[in-house]
Image (cartoon, rainbow, N blue to C red; front, side, top):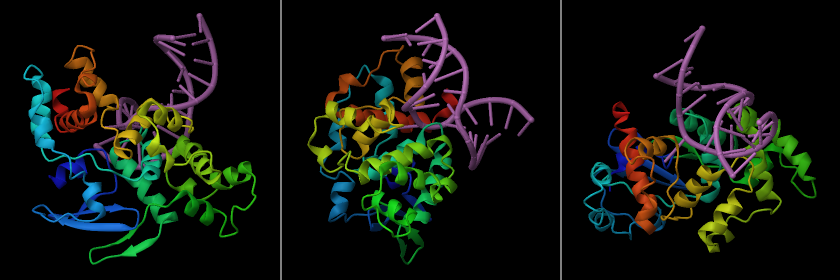
Length: 273
DNA sequence: CTCCAGGGTTTGC
DNA sequence: GCAAACCATGGA
């Protein structure tokens, strides 16, 4: 496992190197600080870091004729597909559209500081990623959603501190997502039971969630590793390297892992484009 | 100042 | 159906 590569691999936005050589990961109200030479990963983090999957074996099964994939996988050795929180992935990847990665991180941290729960550790003060209920409660200043009409909550959210999170035109998408969860129009826990096709359709009901964002949520939260989100970087590779033919479907149930290797490879070899 | 960012929705043909 | 216009705003 290579923590530096995972932090830089574009699948997560909050994990970071807090002091040289020490990396912080956070999910829900769980925080862990790891050194590069970590050895013990226990409890919920076993699942989070996808420890039960044999990535070396997966890399060894890449066909020899796919030289670009071979190179990308070698470069990305140590990357894992994190099993992250569905709500956090929905909000994070809605924010991600047409934003640079530093700008995405900045917006997400502002959202956490405004609506999350403060936690102090030996390294830092950090805020949890707020649930939909926490965002609604703080917006309504504790008066509760009760039998509040959806439209009223939506308008209140549009005027809340969310306005200060640099969300731009995505603000109304975030407000829609909060409303969907609060009013039970989507149940994120029950989505684990859907097959991938149904999962993508359900996710795309959310305003501002299209094909790419839905695929990212399905891959990074619901661990649908057969899905390979196609973004601008992947598109550049498909067109520039693979002659316009998407190479990922042939990788079957590990296509999403290959996508992550390619994404990291493209990001760290920008000069080749 | 200009350009572009891990896209999605709306509009026009 | 498909391509093009439009979207807000931080970084570079």
